[in-house]
Image (cartoon, rainbow, N blue to C red; front, side, top):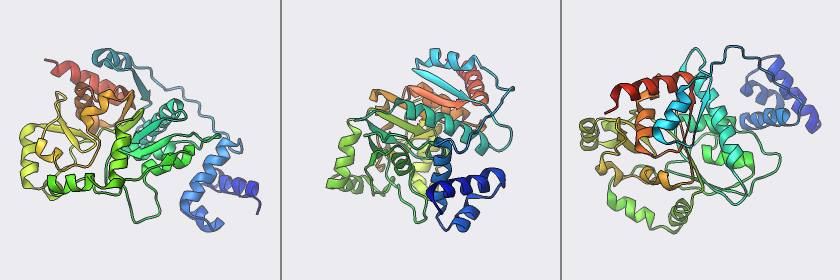
Length: 310
């Protein structure tokens, strides 16, 4: 089977017959990630053309209001899709992938965060017709998995033809002594040096995902007392945008979210009802300069911002 025939067959199975990517992988004798790349190539080479006529899209003034209130460079809104939050997250991921892809240039150093929202960006980013000579680096430790799925920062690097630098350390360690010992390792030091020269960063805006099982009783109690509503790069913050829980910070191997403000392009991604308070806290923190979310989330964030403004 020629390369072209394989692209056509994968496209027909997926778009015309509704086969899953796992089923197509079995039929073609390839892996599921390879199927994903075949489908992306088919779209890029014009074998597949997708046209969506959306007559229900709503333009929301919330984008401009949030941009002005928080001094943002830009707010990008995807349509809100009825149903599970995952559907809207995927739409937001596609939009964020377009925003990121449009900004990356040769020579750039790009930091990639963690979480489901960033995973959706990695899923959606299109393969570059011409490779981009950029450097892609994770912004937190803990990026490895036993399965075939590659980490988000590696998938983004693969898609645009950039060079990836891994960080093979946990994101959360037992104590500050362990953290400092790991930071002294030459391989880790090289990544930390790249963090100091970031041109772009894209991070997920996370909700309250911590508990005593993951951070211990002492830190869990401190987070509860501080009123933490969300986190960026394992850095929790409250509804007013104040980063809290210094005890946890001493155990985290991640780019300091408080330093995102100095990165020329810092993009925050988050969507859904559960992310309204985290997104507002993130905006008030000043950590992100560009927000990518959906219409309903933006409008809810704006309403809460107005309600809780001091």
